[in-house]
Length: 341
Image (tube, rainbow, N blue to C red; front, side, top):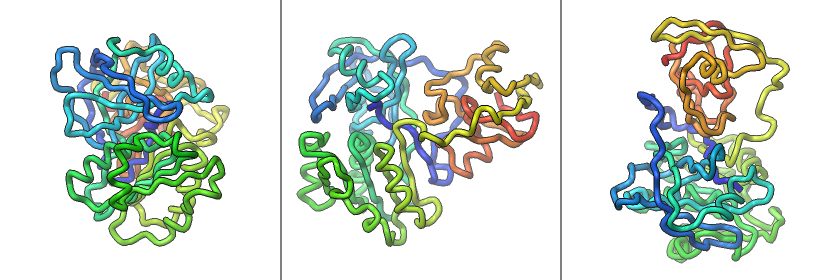
């Protein structure tokens, strides 16, 4: 299964929404090591070919990995954010995935040079949290590993509940062992039957004041946690998906045409019902950097200064949506939608 990168970012602006001057070229990194993390899960360690420090990142960040021409996938960073010497990701080889995980397992070998983007963070730690509750399902533990490293460095109050099918399916078991012994990390094996695993509803029933929840995992797990945390205070629940949730998209047949305007030049462009904003901008000669083109990786984040977007992403929170729009999937309720490009 391709690693998680979709988030809600309900941290009231904590999401990294700093507009860039333009798309940055990916880094050319050497795959330094491929390690066995658990059954069907491999770890991939990337380093700079010259040994130079890598661009810094914060806990919860992810990178884009160009596995082959036209095949780019997003993977959460699982290493220590303080370690500038390597980027570490973990990938589950899932036959039901979109092909990225299989290609990672079957084609990448140590010593290869691989194009990897600079990290960006759509799943950051909340600055105002007094306590951090982490829930992970399967490979969803990946971003939690970097988060734990940062929380430990801060001597913060945190707790992890990690749900897996069996011990042999449990990634990062050795790294988590000291935290398990200390009573901060709890690993739950359900044998494939969620009813025999963690009581998510009971765990999240009564949140303590100041507690923030972070969760990541497969669809069924995400649905269960979302339902259990529905009554948590606004802004205290943060999550990251593997891909855009099924059924979240409006029917494309209901799309209406609208106009966009480029604020810098005043150029007005028509967006037909069957085209996206990105499609139209590219046809007009504008270079737009995208990756998922499904509203969950954040690559095409664009500020706007006029009009009302029809937000169709699952990344931005209410505060961010007043300033930014993901133009790969979102549309407009009013015309023109003025983009700060």
